[in-house]
Length: 429
Ligand SMILES: [Zn+2]
Image (cartoon, rainbow, N blue to C red; front, side, top):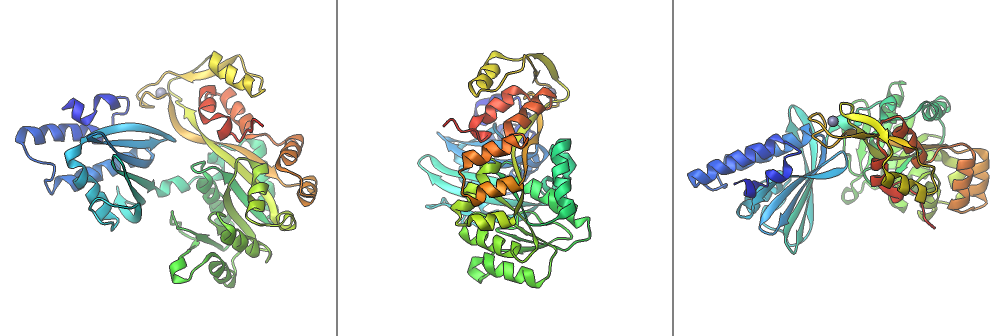
């Protein structure tokens, strides 16, 4: 049955779930009992969720693949195969997960999603399930929103001394708007919550508007946007202001409505935190302009931009320093960056499941918006000129911060190359 479970394919990642699935399928086959056994499917799904959480997975992908159901976990940003389930059990396996989030357990004709709080080892984890019919069968992804992920302090995110000082400087003045910028999955939410935790410790009243509320946090008032019930972004902002908070957080500026609501809140003199999608610090101005925010509104509100990406940390147990690999040097030189002669690599051990990496860390570009930058924005200068001015002012780029972390052995040049020039917001134009 090795073939049926795909156990050989997943040996580097010895997940308990896969081992159990393997043993269980063997048992089932020998007894000629089908997987439809009522006790078994819920137990197996529970075990999968538990393992995924223990392995720090952010997502579980379940894909129909030529007669099998392939299960993958996204760990530290990288998808890894975990197990294959014979196709005849697809419907029961997916059906059970769909039923957990109140979706119709039969195969769907159109994409659908649902969510629920699910208890795993005495912690309520928010599960978000998305199902899409494909030509090869149903594809499901389960996002695990583990509250542990938003319990970090600013110190733990990976900011260097100089970057932390810029944030501390803002925390002393506490004015205007702070934006956390990055791509999807770049750790924006973790950073926003690290800031919120810091503000909460100052005995301030903090209110958030989120769509949806992904993580529940004690001591913070969280409002969920609910268009169908008339709780729009602007409605929620009005309600929020009546509650007289010191700080507001708008989860994400993703469209004109949320951006306008955020700016309106900020114009009342409240401190505003939010996140948006952007390639780097200078790119946030372009994103705001694309959301129809005027240059004068940007300069009036914008104080600090925390632009970020996540890179995998080298495993502390098996990393060592050696000559920098030629392909990594070549990649850096093609970007016009002086490549170091030595770098760190990790060969893999039991601690890192033989991947060479364990956990992730942020790389940052922290831009304190100064008068010169405000002048450029007011004159409607383009993103390139703004980026140039940010570099001239001594703010390190995402890649430069990544290079510092590689030199210190925190991550590897190969990992920077994996994230890629696009990931670091570098344009080839
Ligand atoms: Zn290791």
